[in-house]
Length: 242
Image 1 (cartoon, rainbow, N blue to C red):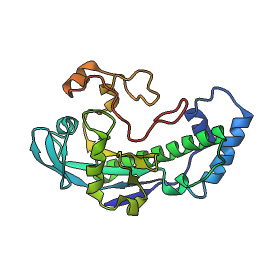
Image 2: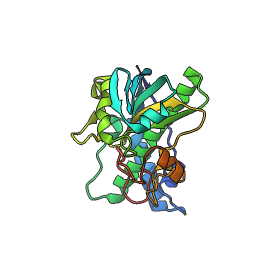
Image 3: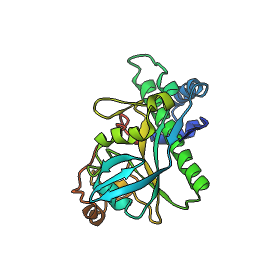
Image 4: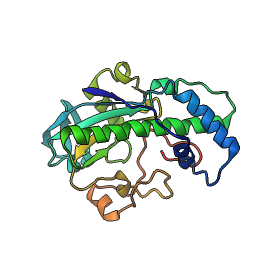
């Protein structure tokens, strides 16, 4: 088990791009600069991962790191995979604990964008680190709750692989299996020659976080019926990626 802390290096342009600002706005530019100045001294985006092995395959059931799962999505993607990398990444409790004035929608929304980018930086760094350390040319990932074939309730099993996640990186689960801080993600990285994207199995239209086009044939193979699934990290308000 290892924890990676990612340097906070988010620039104003990245925030503007995430907010889909089409032209320079001095008012919003000032807010972005102000909030980044608040975030930089405290932000500690981080990711926790474990090296685990897939065992006891039986139908759609399998064991990962000593914890049992039942999921067609997992079974198909991990059919020929032995070693996997369960992970939990977060923007960090330090950033999530920053308080902003109530009623200031634009500042609160902008700060949510900054936290989302912090989470993404932690996940991207983890993926690059795993590729380098374990000599994998290609890694894909799956996330509980992104599709019905791997329900969000399996967050509990995933967390069980690590033990005291709250003590390790400050992330905890609610009774409904959502993560706190909200800008956190969990899943499993696995080596693959052909990239897997859960977006190809989801028919949800106009999704701001879509990374690949829906493919009906791929969805059929995994037993998906075009449902949208449930994202363990709810999307940002207005127009922003989940």
